[in-house]
Length: 149
Image 1 (tube, helix red, strand yellow):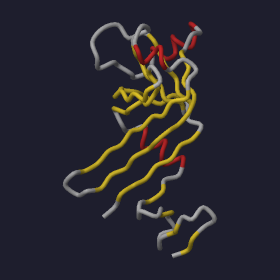
Image 2: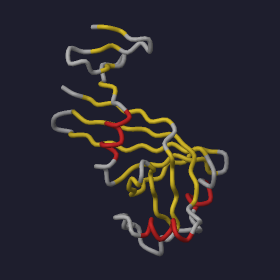
Image 3: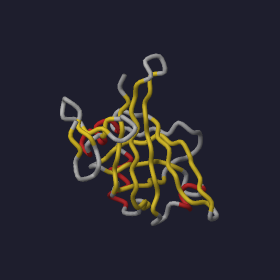
């Protein structure tokens, strides 16, 4: 097994493997997997404490788009804030799966044309009530791991 400058080992298929034996995913693979997940978790700061909220989302031009209520705690806490976002999928029977984490700045969509484009996305809120506020997270850092057996 070879070790690269980041300390990651390569397996016989050329995939990067971290110190825990998990396959390290490329940015392209992370984005592909995110596009398959219906639910993720956004991590933000609420009154100086970390908060995690499950959300449904979709990808649009490489950005993570979340639809929420304009008066929600999530909407208030993510205005121009750096947030983390995580999505995953695991098979409990085979003990395999993947996890992708994004870190980036969140912003609210405010341009009427942009809001119209976002409203046309296949992003139907699961939670009840009016959800006409869009949060866009641009993934400045993106990392992912896959567990194989």
